[in-house]
Length: 149
Image 1 (cartoon, rainbow, N blue to C red):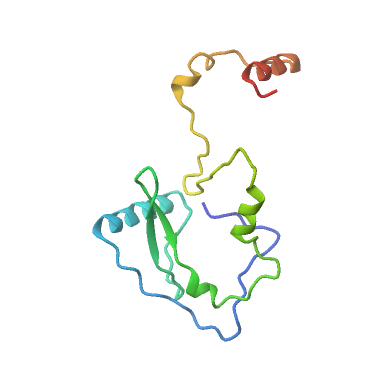
Image 2 (cartoon, one colour; image 1 turned 90 degrees about the horizontal axis):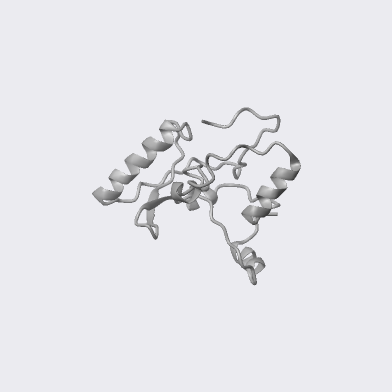
């Protein structure tokens, strides 16, 4: 669901006098409208979003992923023009790519599903019924066997 109330209150500061911005939705083909409805229902069912009557709005578009499914993007450019810029912004994407030069392992996270790593049941068949290790020595033996130690 929505995040719990926290001790620190976060906010997005607006340029003084900024009027609410709402762009017209982008036209979507029927298959993408269907995808939008499905993704919004899923996000609503999981409690990640809720209905709103805010005068602020941003259009949605989709980009096809390698597996053929669609990733939803929200175009916040018009809204971002009305915000006070952060003194400590997130690093620029090209600076992050420069830091990755020479790396051998890369990872990607999909926050929409929130499920992380998927296990292939056929690959764990031989170990799923093992008894849990009770001593540090047994745990070290298992980790060595698994190649993580």
